[in-house]
Length: 128
Image (cartoon, rainbow, N blue to C red):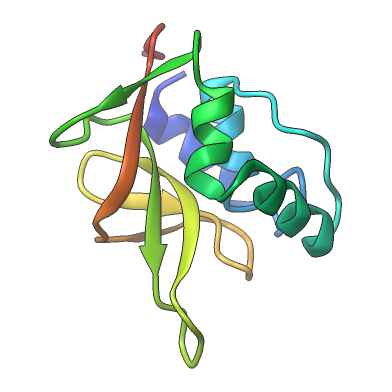
């Protein structure tokens, strides 16, 4: 399945911790297994226990995806930092759609933004 089709199929889903959120979506795209979580507190605990979101992905990506230096390609996954309205900056997982980073906003569905990636991974077995 192409990244465009994957994102389009995901666009109709509501936010749900551990299934359709800003970490679960890119994990599902890559085939990365995350520890199970179903609440914000569990997600924050999982991330804190790993030493942060980048560290969580670094521990789960070997054998599935490799770190990328430079510009992302469609289908790459990254940890980006966004600034929600009236909130502090937050790190989230996102998928490069070829022009911008696609992610799951709290309202559900899919949104896209231009952002600098803190770290990027490319699937070892690219999806078409």
